[in-house]
Image (cartoon, rainbow, N blue to C red):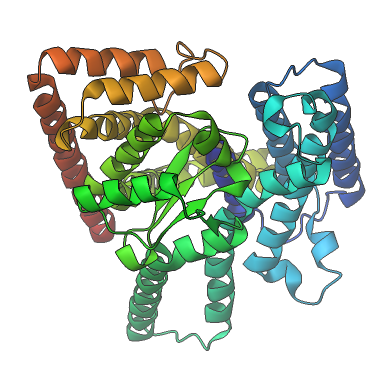
Length: 443
């Protein structure tokens, strides 16, 4: 899930940094040919590779191919020639973002279409049609692109307003845009769960002993929510989630596979884990963790951009016939994409692992035996194909999580020590983030 969101972030970075004006020497026909060749490659490579039910390595490869293809299409070829068919579209961020996302989702859809025959015998999807399988995969990722599109539309509308030239006009424009951005972000954080549950076609958990047992657990712990839902788009996975920071718009979601295959005690342990994320305010903290990547990119823009401009100006003066000026957006994208990938892998991944361990330790906070959480993790590992030792950059491996719980059961000081460690790291990070933002505003 996290990897899919990282790939989407790179795609949105392409939409953000794509040149705003056409490249006169580029050839859109070459870009179209490269895109079609990439689609053909994605459609055929699954038949040459035996998936054996393992999609992850091949969806990773398909995403890398699509990112490389769209990078060439938008930064080296005249993609704006397509947008110019619609008057004014080439100058609109929304149009560029829309076309990039359409190209990306077509490529992903084609991957899942071609991968389906190899996966048709997998127990998790044996009763799912090809088109439903493709729909489920795309339905998961599409809603996360909506906030970017909303901000693009607002930005395009804001650019249509009369722009003053005085310093006071610029100040007021900055203040208004900042307030508008803050309001949009706040609205997204509160109401986005409703959008997600609509796109994911979530349904209320059927009444019965299982739901009543989970409801009783929530009441005992004092956890408030707006409903317990099934999670159709992730139905092939043994997973659950809580979305929403406001109880009125907070939902608990379980996949059908998890409810059907795990024991009732293990399902309770999974719910306790998810409630732990809510108790520790992880859903509120994650946006601030992601904000760190944006601050680094902003600092790079201040420090790196003048160097790039000086280098390209020098090369253009030495080689007037060269196309050095057109390389500026591509160099910026390569730099920023590298920063985003490294940041998510090491910084976001570091905090995510800490948060996951905190969520596991919630079993101690609610007075349940740690063996219940250990058994739940073991069941998930077994039912997922004995993946206990598979490394995870954002969760720890299942074996590591089980071993830590066993150690904490023997020495309860590990529980409080871990919570204190997370607190210290978060305080240090937030102080550094605040100082960086202040420094950026001052400069």
